[in-house]
Length: 216
Image (cartoon, rainbow, N blue to C red; front, top):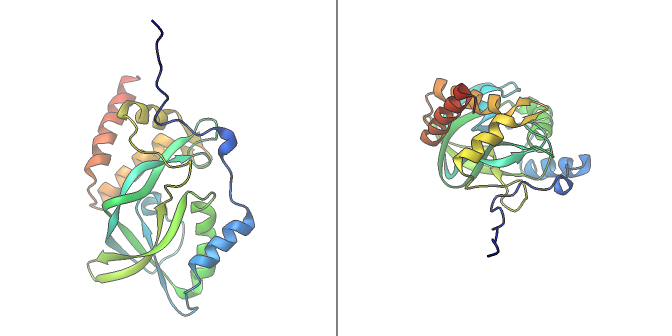
């Protein structure tokens, strides 16, 4: 009897399929997102992952914010910051559906060009995100913020990974910004310190810590 093996439903993209945006492509993306911005206007940026614990830009105000229509998920292969093309890690993306609690940061108008240039280099090395201007609910009313949403039409997108495999990937990947496991644990800690409750992430971190303690 011949055994028929099913293809992996969540294959890691081949290294050759990964491509960074060119300087011209990244600049065009930034200019498109800022097309409606007026030079005397402050802007808001929404953070849901590492931007909460390492924003790396100056801001004049920070607020808790609720974004509807998207949820936080480890759905993005990281082949630069927290992994490599040969051994990608996983980072958080904003996937469609549900809602997400995070932070919005107010960037003063005078700092917008420089801040956005640096932010694009950090968040847009590839086409994995789609920047959008979305309404976020805060304790002081609605604000329209720049939000980096997940681009499902890219080989960087993945969902539905079994927990055991997800933990294995997180534990073993390492990129230019450091270990993937550090990224996940730092994000979970930052959310906790900000009184943002994410039950799925808390459950994952519990299993991840158990795995690390057990040396499995």
